[in-house]
Image (cartoon, rainbow, N blue to C red; front, side, top):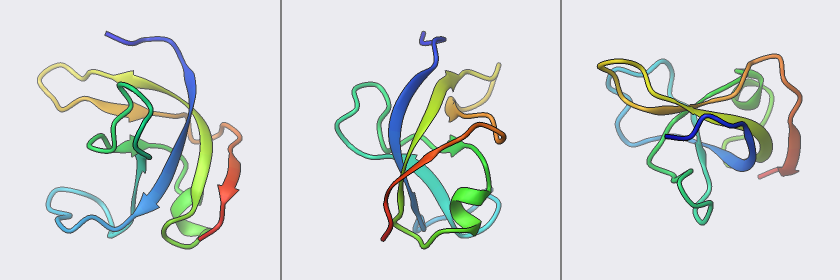
Length: 88
């Protein structure tokens, strides 16, 4: 189980199924980052999806969150700074 914070690259995207999700745009890790796979959603600042076009890539500090009885996801505090890597 991962508990340390790490920096990874994420991107905003529009999933084909938004059932049970808030809004049409979400954030996921880009491929090739070990355990931080694109199948996981990232809970982070809404600025990443509100202020930038879909497909923009960011570098953010994250860790895994394992809620009891829930689905694991990746977490980054909404107030933490982020770097825009590539604006789509």
